[in-house]
Image (cartoon, rainbow, N blue to C red; front, side, top):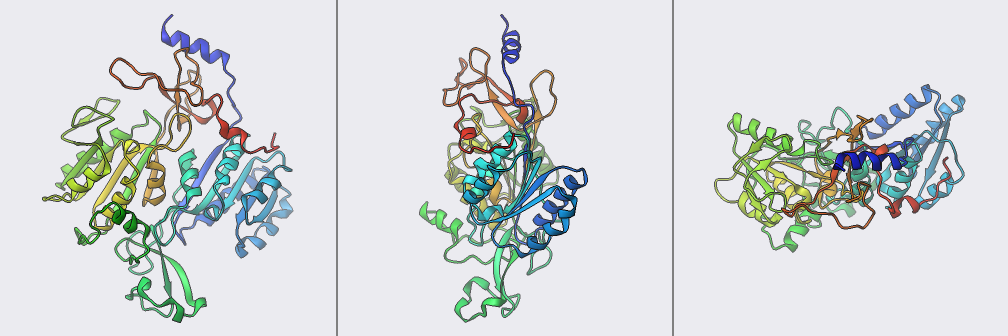
Length: 439
């Protein structure tokens, strides 16, 4: 029997969750219109007569009056909570929710990831808004998990501008005070002498951001023994962009297109690819397009060493980021701080729907994270695919915890893109961690 016939026969034996919803993440820094974007979606569902819930973590005064003005529609419930346990208990008593909006998700615990996964599994559309990093450039663990699981990522438009220069896009958070001039150094101020009511968190670009001695990125690089006293490569503000998605979604094709464009406009570019993904010093996409030469490296430290060699590039492109070690995260962020334009591509989820390598953390710390999609490989479905399914030798989806099969060349095989409704991992423990009576 041909493998395609075996796959079709196996598909007929499976029962997929056709009512599965989706997870939409709205990330950003402070004053990035995350809450405004979330409210617009909630009002859109209410106008269609759908039943939903608005959840806010923390004591958000802006939400206390807003839900009251919508109660005359009879379709909205509101909840201000301080813990995921409180939210889980509330949801266990609610049924028939068609959408859920969660704001200030970064203030919640990691259990929120399992709750949102279960809500989507039971058919709800989950909108999540929250900051991705704090002022010390530490990514919030809850947002790392949620961005990895997201079916869609919406960056509010227009992007926030820097509070200090007013020009550059501001992905970072900076503490400042009305008592400090805009050309001051906020992190070097004696905050004990500053009036607490005048302290505020503002969006800040990489060029205006002042790095304190407690900065997480600098600390991680110092732990690796790397020199963090490098001078800025250029006066141009650096950036960190990332494209991610399942296999066969065009990530390498996008990286090759970016490299071709940079070369065409006569800018210096250095392209890197992990040695586990290829045996040749070039990028090769599934569509057959190529880019060479590319530096084939074994770890993130080699990227650091080669970028800082002379002549230095203006752009740094890194493909197959999921195979790199966690040190890739501080290195990419610091290169952007030095003025490099860093472009990263990689798979965000392993086939078992778990975060894959350093990509999810890079999604949280990047200026922009673009989630690419493929086309679902199921014959009767052409929906956007955000997951990677792995088949076993029998043609059925591989069991959770099973080892991947390899071809004679040593590469893993049996992978195909799937939409969330036609994605299945038998025995996955995550769907039993939270018991929500939403059916």
